[in-house]
Amino acid sequence: MNAQQFDAIVSGFYRAATGACEWEAALEPVRAAFDARAAILHMADVQTGRLLGLDCGGPDMQEGLLAYLREYHQIDPRREAVLRDPAAVIGRWWHCNEHLDDSFVASNAFYQHFLPGYQTRYLATTMLPVSERIGTIFAFEIPAHRGPLNPDEREFARRLGTHLHDALLAYERVRQLMQQALAGHQLLASYPYPMWLLDAQRGITFENPAAVAERERGDRVAEVGQRLVLVRSAADRQLGECLLRLHQAGHGAQATVDLRPTEADPPLWLHLSLLVPGATLGAFGERPMVLATLFDPQHVSALDPFALAQMFRLTPTEAKVAVRVAEGLTAEQIGLQLHTAQSTVRTHIREVLAKLGASRTADVVRLLRQGEALWAAKRRADDLADHQPRPRSGDR
Image (cartoon, rainbow, N blue to C red; front, side):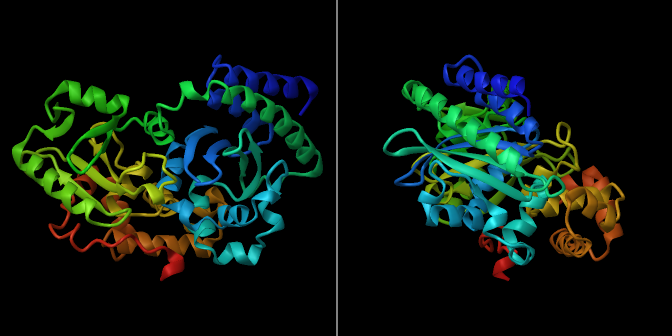
């Protein structure tokens, strides 16, 4: 990184702090300069752990951030290590490779099931306090092939962190203007799928722009008294039943509502997932909420990893592996793309086979390439009743 790049990045920090640009735009040059997968700002209440803001520089990371908030932060050993000793990262840099060795990584569910799905391996992070209760974690998620930061890069990171701290102190002065939008709302707004956050009474606490457009069209969903309703009465009854049962279940419980008038009609699904405040860092508010996502295969590819993960309860890495299997890649080729061992890829393929109810890889390829076969797969009527939060590989 040369002096001109450094100055441009610092200038971006202050532009974001004063509202002249978004933090994502200020973070992207940081990510590029360090050849990282993502540069992240994670603002939190240091006393309660509640998430107050989340910004990311890096392409195609919204899916990973949502999966992390909804579930995978609970098994992130890096987060656990940092929170166990916060003083180690306040004003200092923490590098995961200095604390978690390769043998640990090879046997850890978070490293094997989450990070490869987003082509990340190493973490470099520091915490920048901006008030007595609020701190911002500044982090780089780094690909395996790039390797951890070298000494020169660490010095640049330290200097950038100092300037970022000053910019964040300025930003905190206008924080009250930004607090009306929860961090989770900001994240959902970036998705192309229609998404709603619903309470137990169908109350709409948030809808992203795609959901607003879908509701205003009025042919499939509508709003009555700030409550979400489905135009087809049978589907609307099913939605009410699912919401009631989901709010009685645990975090991560899921259900799917079939929006098709008949089984002969094009497939259309409303996927529901329960979000509990204590399990999502408060990113979606202080009450349990159901995240409702509308998947329409006319607008979403049958090989969309996010949709596959939701509909078949695949882990992020399993979903990425499934897509590549359907594209005809071998385990060796997939391992090279995801920077993981062939043996690990084969384990993921076996999990995909089981979750899709297939016995051979060829069946997975056929199923995923036949978009209608994938999207029209009927969910079992007892799907929700039998549901328990999905076990992670470390729990098996």
